[in-house]
Length: 230
Image (tube, rainbow, N blue to C red):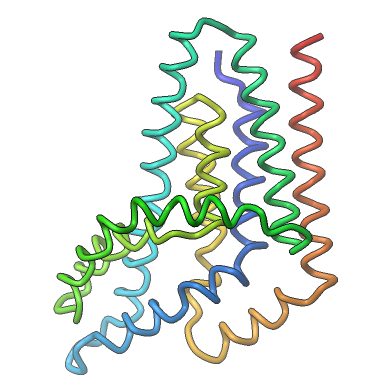
């Protein structure tokens, strides 16, 4: 049976991570977005369309990865046998949310380990985006974004680990979709506006309050898992 409240809770938690982690995203990816804008032929008037398609490609790669890996983990859990295993995975998911809260608040940067692990995947994907640059047509921005979505990022990969730990394909898809949509507003801003936004997002009060909000979502998830165990 589909647990709709849990799906909604996870989607909005992931969306919140995307929004609150935007300062990190701007630092890592705004250069790519700017390079994308500059790579467009001067005769084209579709710079905004290319940027949008690039980001939709990036979000698509997150969502598909969440679906595939969460579906794989669900098969493994079914094979291992049990509903109780799903509850323990739910507890692990809540712990991942707490770690992400600490990461966003910059109280603990241990999730950088996940980013380093992602380098193994990125090593094989990295050469492929070069075939799309310079961008010859706005539609090519979508596959470019899809490939760049695998760029090693502690925030993305840690959210993916959380999605995998749900052991549910739909839930994994929604978590990564919510995260991707949360990053979209910041990533659509290039230039001075993105730098102003990054300044606000990097304020200590904003980071701490962001981490606290996310931690409350994690505690709610832990409470639900505890009730299921009782």
